[in-house]
Amino acid sequence: MPESSGEQPIEVSVNVHYLDRESAPEEERYAFAYTITIINHGSVASQLLNRHWIITDGLGGVQEVKGPGVIGQQPWLGEGEQFRYTSGAVLKTPVGTMQGSYQFRTDGDAHFDVPIDVFSLRVDGMVH
Image 1 (tube, one colour):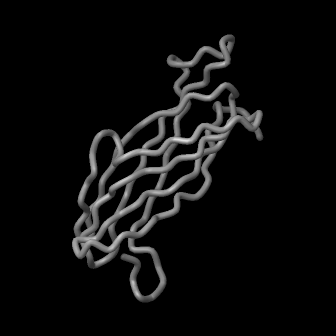
Image 2 (image 1 turned 120 degrees about the vertical axis):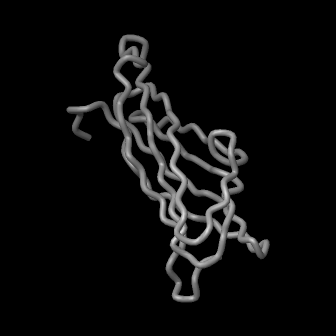
């Protein structure tokens, strides 16, 4: 649950890579891998329950992804612990964005959401 100071105890960082070998621009297929690192800076153990992603391509097409956990896991993070995973997204355009949230539960069964700020998916060298 968020700390009393108002700061979010869960930090989420993202690193994105374009997957040239998995892409087929002539078929409007642009594949991206993103690595997410989740760190619990709080003093309460928390479990990632659900994910919600909004993926938008360069033409405004939107894909929404909701479901339990990430990559088939619902990790518990104790104080100072981190969890890292890699997943992917496929767009019809060489540029797009992702944003979303994770739903967590504390060991005291309090639920809270962690927003994930918008980040870019773009082919290397593309300016948008």
